[in-house]
Amino acid sequence: MSVLPFIKMHGCGNDYVFVDAMAWTATKIGTFEFAAVARQVSDRHRSIGGDGLVVMLASDHSDADARMRMFNADGSEGTLCGNALRCMAMWLHQSGRCGSRCRIAMHDRIIDAEVLCPEPDRKRAHVRCVIGTPVVVSPAATGLQQYLRHITLPDVLLRGQPLQLIAIMMGNSHAIIQVDDLKDVPFDAIGPRVERHPEFPDRTNVEFVQSTGASSASVRVWERGSGETQACGSGACATAIMGWATGLFLLSAPVEIRMTGGDLIVRLSTENVVSLEGPAEESFRGEVQVSLL
Image (tube, rainbow, N blue to C red; front, side, top):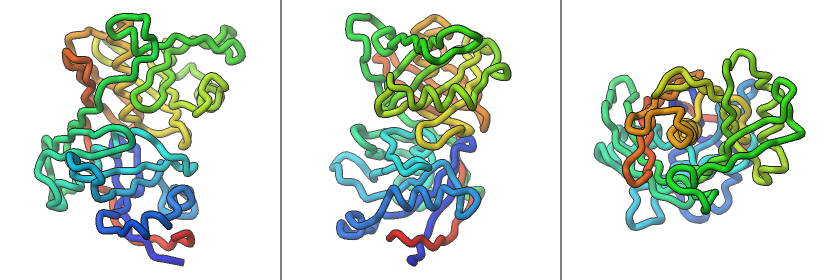
């Protein structure tokens, strides 16, 4: 058994076990069992509990201040996580590693982040992250429609009809399902079926979206590899893109995405670059015994 120091942080209730690995050697990184540790520490009954594990590493890019790897509760590695990125940006700032602005490398992109309203005494902040441009999935389309792929799942029924959804890639996969009332959706039945549907060979995040106005929506999230979570930052961005592209939301206005654990704001630049704003907060720190270091 080995002792692993950790920091528990969350963005709108989307909570992760963060590990400060900034000073780790290449040998330690190479032998660290990321997936197994993620499964162990995410267990809410036998360990710390969380939606996954985030490892904060020294940058391997000359134009980034740090690097982040995120592992879902089932041990699978994520390619984007807006809530965890905001938490890491806050930690970098409050630990003195960066100023109010920083750049974090994750998977195939570098995220610009800015701590807008720091509250170091309360270990929380409001943080904006520039997530980037969605992936083109419909090259024959124009405008924002090029980021949308309309899919029918004939073997998944909602109110007796084949399920209609919109797939969006924000660097990770999202399936957006529009509903009239979130309370009437068989969430626990449809969420896991869509996540693991053959249409999504690498699995997908699933967002159930109820419009609440010209620039707002309520969203419930079934997250790839973690099940239901209280929020999903990249899912908020995907929801906003869907709404802007389909006319559900006003194109000129930011969108408020109301999730189970809190509210997030999504903005779109004239170059179709998406930014995400919301809270980040530290819950507690401690040490956990892990048998897989």
